[in-house]
Amino acid sequence: MKVIIFGATGMVGQGVLRECLLDRDVEAVLTVGRSATGQVHDKLREVVQRDLGDLGPIADALAGYDACFFCLGVSSLGMKEADYRRVTYDLTLAAAEILARLNPGMTFVYVSGASTDSTEKGRAMWARVKGATENALLRLPFRGAYMFRPGYIQPMHGIVSRTRFLRVLYALVAPLYPLWRRLFPRYVTTTERLGRAMLAVARRGAPKPVLENDEINAAGA
Image (cartoon, rainbow, N blue to C red):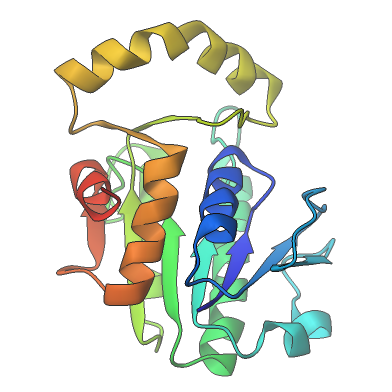
């Protein structure tokens, strides 16, 4: 299996990249982002593209892949809806549309979030935008498209967020994770489990296109 990862420098993307590089069934990994991961591996090829809204210049590099794991995203805190939509919806669809054209047999997995609003009409701005993004992706002609809605994600294996605020937050709440895992197993996951779930779904598909946190954990078990 040949895999493309968008957002491999983020916390989730780092975890997905780790699992892809460890997986024997994955023969090649291409990362696409505004900056390189800094990792070196025989399987790994990196493309740095400053304008992720225009992938035309690197289109040739995107052909011939079996799966795309789209982990690119930003927090909506302090953002206006138009700006958040430009990053969340526009960039995602710009990538997905060109990938669907180049790789119609591809499985596309999008990291969304718990409580995403599929109706696109709710009060929470981020949830409406995520819902619109999911709905648009599900209309594209991929072999399979799956929306992952994780809850709390515990970083593993030394992975950290690039955002200072989130690094501090995770450092503060990390001691509580074992307790949360016991009390609320349906609502917490890890970067490792998330990456393994993506690979499992890329190989075998899933019973439905939208996977909530507990279904992600089951797929990645």
